[in-house]
Length: 136
Image (tube, rainbow, N blue to C red; front, side, top):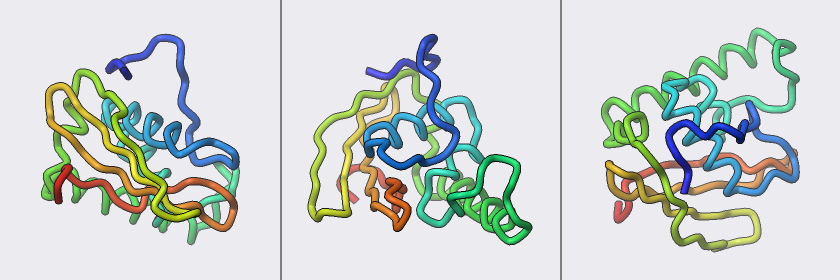
């Protein structure tokens, strides 16, 4: 179970090679629970990757802002608001439907169940392709 404010675990600020998809989901959940949509958006497939923090080009900065705004919109209008307000999260079932795709179910308390779909990018980092309420 992932508590709302874990005291001893610091998630990575962005996708890193060799980090498993479960770690990406957990890191995104922690960022969302803190209300840090920009950090949570760094794990989305649409976000730029590869540049160290603070070294992004203007184009990468614009892409990061667009990814954050897209996630903000989903949180507001796409039924994902419980991701911001949950007290705890538990990783449930997972599947690897293809070599470069992963699905992770997450149960939020309160808030219900959600499904993360992740893809392995060219830099060998797992990225979130989508988040949806379970069953959608």
